[in-house]
Image (cartoon, rainbow, N blue to C red; front, side, top):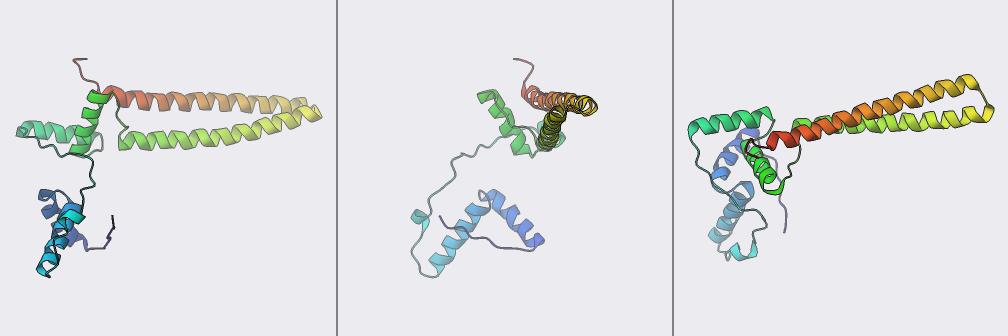
Length: 178
């Protein structure tokens, strides 16, 4: 399927998005507009030539205002949109999985980079340790052994933080009735 990309001024894009929400999203509205323009030009309708590629179904909920307020507060606290929060909750309940929130993903990525940096330093320390054993320098050997031990402790700390972030996210989606 072909892709069309274009740049619009922010105000025009905001107005288009407001209309597109009711029409099923940007792509759906653009397909309708293009199809309508071609029909106006005397072209045959391309509705059959534009298969729907979305593999998800739309679900509509009616909630009381106070529920919406609480839902928005919970979603905002996690750095998510209302729909993202609901999808994560449903996936957790139905499939026992849920991806970490944006905030947790930032922390996880930071821990990942930190572990990578520590791994590079650890590799360098091990090489220095091997070199020190070759020349039998007791002072260098003790210093490098201490460096390796400190890297081991740093890795353990980072892994503990990473595990807490992941466990915390999963625990968030668990409900009291489980």
